[in-house]
Image (tube, rainbow, N blue to C red; front, side):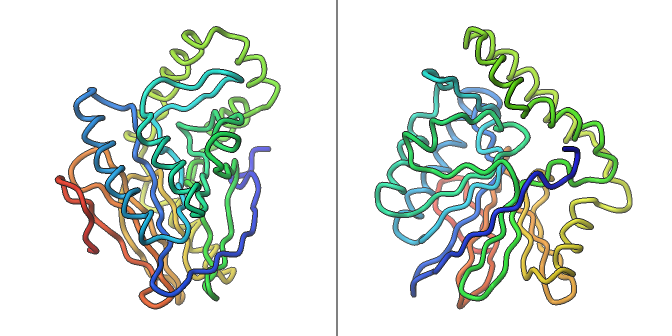
Length: 267
């Protein structure tokens, strides 16, 4: 229950010639002022529109929303443009796989039933044209995260979530928002020390035979080589220079910076 890895699902992805796989994390829609959040969503929509033409699969590696908790008949207000863009991808036959983060773990059925998106509570192993990838948000992977693992086990417990959904949505979403703010503050001020647990976790997976380990959560974009593989952190979208990643069998993995006015250019 308190393991850094909740579960591990394996999927096969075939990338046709001329296409790529896109990885996005830590957009945190709903965070900050309405104006800043609108700009952030505009940037995301430009990327998702591009994915409709260039991508054969899209992976969301957690914290797309600063808060997500859907009830049986109610979902959080706002960001209908993003929901429509995601539905557009699946309607065009482009699979979207969504790994829960530490802010947007409150999924029930909406994304699966209404948008056709697979939502994973745990980690995912992906085989892409002979390349083996390990995908996870990264929460609970840092050294000394025992307290968070206890909290995660409580917040994601099915009985606890069932009871929570009996709260009026206005109250439930407000309380979840307070938890989200506390989680983000914990991540921002956490001292990762001289040994970054996310990197150590990634290196251990590479030692097991994975070629690429792709994470978010840390809000620090980068690619670190290790034993013939790479630990990749996708960064975040909370200020200028939003980042994400793409992978193609011919070019491998490439980090991408989203310019402020939209569009995207490889680093």
